[in-house]
Length: 257
Image (cartoon, rainbow, N blue to C red; front, side):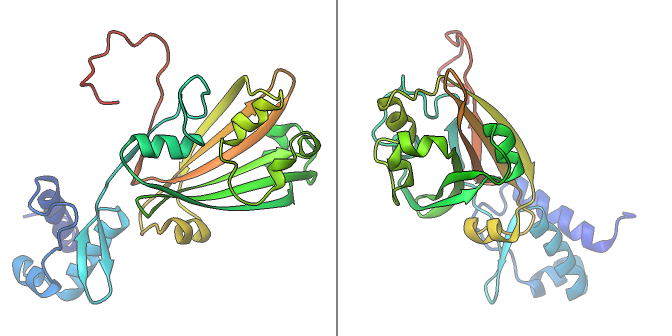
């Protein structure tokens, strides 16, 4: 006889059902009454087991519609090619990558003059509280919230690149725009971390309980100084990042990429 609490037994059995494909992504689970009969358990016990799976990001609940297995239509982002001007682009890197994957991009913009928080000041080598241009994108893949991207540019760049302050998209992408002005990004440093979302992030990205966010911070450098810092916040359940470094000629074309 299992020593685990009954609600964990319920969760473990349903988790196994999901793993072996009894309930595929998008499928609805049996009703609470059906699960009560299956496990000879009270409604509160069944709900506790279901809520555990919700917190793990395996299932989601909708009022009046019961529980369903989460769909995970993962978008693969090749971070080593993102914004690399040696690769062909039709517009900015995000639109190009999403379109090339056979999916549909959509994004909204907000541009404002703001002040640099500490983590931005450290990376841009400017004083905390100094003025920066913030370009904020809310991005979607096939109408599903995919990420938010907040890019800070230092104040000195505004005079040299005035379009950075214009509302809306820069069609060719900001990296190409700056390069056309002789301000070339010749290198970048990436930092990657995970955490649970803030309430605002959960709202913007429509993240359910138990789903973390992936934080991707990229600081871009000219040959003299940092020129921008971008923090991309991605849904942890719908994204995978790849890097390709060095000669990969020995890799089989059917290997995961």
